[in-house]
Every structure is written in C-alpha cells, then in structure tokens.
Amino acid sequence: MKRIIIFIYGIVGYLSFVAATLYAMGFLNNVVVPTGIEKGVLRPFPVALATDVGLIALFGLAHSIMARKRFKAWWTRIIPSEAERSTYVLQSGLLLLLIFWFWQPMPTLIWSVESGYGRYALQAIHWLGWIIAILATFLINHFELTGLQHVFYNLRGTGPAPARFVTPFLYKMVRHPLQLGLLIAFWVTPDMSVGRLIFAATMHVYILIGLYFEERSLQQQFGAAYAAYQQATPKLMPHPFKK
Image (cartoon, one colour):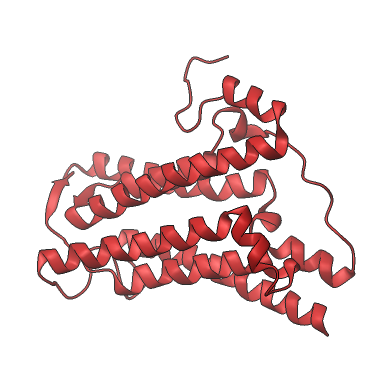
C-alpha cells in the first residue's frame, strides 16, 4: 500500500510539472490561460515590481535549497527517499503556477515588431525554444528528471539503474540545452513589455545561479568525465563553427 501511495504521489508531482509547463506557454503568450504576463489588473509600478520579483525569488530559493545534498539528506529523514524527487517536482510546479496566478502585469512596451514576417519569425524562434527545452528532457531521461522513474521502480520493488554520463544530440552542442531552450522562450518575443523583461531577466539570473550549483554536483558525481565535457562543450551558447 505504501508503494502504491508513493506511486500516485509521483503521478501528482508529474502532472504538476506538465500543468506548469503548459500554463507557462499560455502565460508568456497571453493566450488560452486566464492570466498572462501582460493580462490582469494594473497595480502601481513599485507594488507590481516587488510582487513579481518576490514571486520569482521565492521560486528560486525553494528550488535551489531543495536541490542541495544537505537538504536532501535531512528531508529524506521526514519523507520516503523514493518520493524525494517527486516532491521536488511538485513544489516546482506549484510555485511556478503561483507565479503565473499572482503575476502583476506591467504592459508598457519596450519594443514591438510590427512587420508580419518579423513577428512570425520571432514567434517561431520562441516556440523553437520550448521544443528544445522539452526535447532536452527526453534526450537524457525525462522520467528520471520528473520523478516518475523513482516511484515506478519503487512500486516494482527494484532500484533504478546507476546514473550514466551521456551526451546525446543537443548535449553535444551545449551542456545545458534545457536551460538554453527556456531562455530562448523567455527572451524571444515580438512584443517586449516591462513585465516580460523583468520576468526574463530574473529567471535568467536564477538559471545562471542554478547552473553554477548544478555543475558542481555533476563534477562531484562524474568526476574527470564531466570535467573533460566542460572543457570541450560550451555551457549555453553553441559554437557555430565548432566541429
């Protein structure tokens, strides 16, 4: 029964990830979902700025703390270790949804591309960013990343296979294609508002900080193999003429 409950919990965590991802797409494009980055009641600029930065800071702080080994060691004394990854995914999804629901719009435009071809090109690049980000999760292990693998193996009563260091397709171009895809989706738009700029800039800062700690963990886990990978492969920006 305990294994079944943990498995159901893992599914809930995974669904929160899917919901947050789909909501983010609508949110950044002000379509389908009830709130958008430029949709909603306008508040005084200082209130909107403090609210939005605070929401992203809350997400970043929780996301970073829960990824640290010391926290995991303490946390798994309280919850089953098999549910740790699913809990991480669940809180990430819920906090992202919190950002989207309580975001305070600042719709003043910084730039707007009026040309039809220009708008279509930027929108295509924006959606390419989402495709890169989602594809990157499947190129490594989507279900391990989102916690489902842990709870599935626990349900079967077996442990997962040891982690392997692999660099398929996009990972041969950059070390972090998932984050690159997200940055493209955040930054590339035909209509850059003040609110969109603040969202993109603060999430960019968080991603850079998160990658610093993630790379430290990967160095500890994979040692010389990852160090060589760091030397040979750029972090986020691909080298167009690299063989």
